[in-house]
Length: 210
Image (cartoon, rainbow, N blue to C red; front, side, top):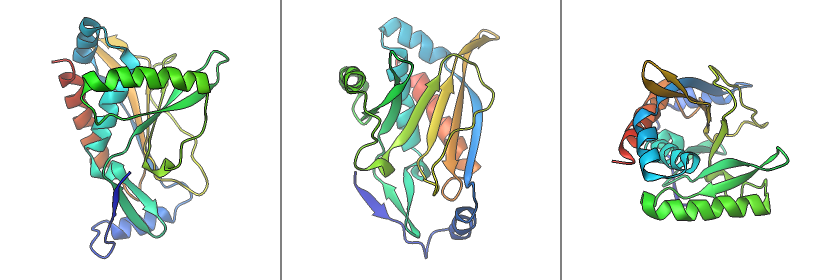
């Protein structure tokens, strides 16, 4: 994936970057109940698969926020032009593998390729992230529970890939809601950037099947 190098001398969050990089656990996370009512109605009418359609929306929303495309590289920052989503795929033995999808395509072109990639991932059962793991957005789901918070495992030393996880959706006051957790490296991402992601996700979810 193509990327540009951020000029750290002009980077407005340089002091924040230096501070949060020094912490043992530099991550920030939040769980929000996302309204998927319109998305569910459109998905049902179209017959599109829930999970792959949701991956499409989440990936496009994350890419709409430049900070979600930034990664720590050495003592500086790079910013990718686009980041693909890498999601977990459940296997029959209750383990999982990884599958990477490209959500830059229009949805009608993305979907058949995503279905093919998903099935290929099941056959190959790979747990490798690929050659450029830095460029990925990490997605996973826990459809068995409706959680209110989530702690995700992280490597040492700390990485800077956003992690986005969703749980079991539920009904409330005539709407359909779904818990969705975002975890990012605080050296790159603040609360306002996470809010921008959720706003972009609302647009993607409500507009996909219109």
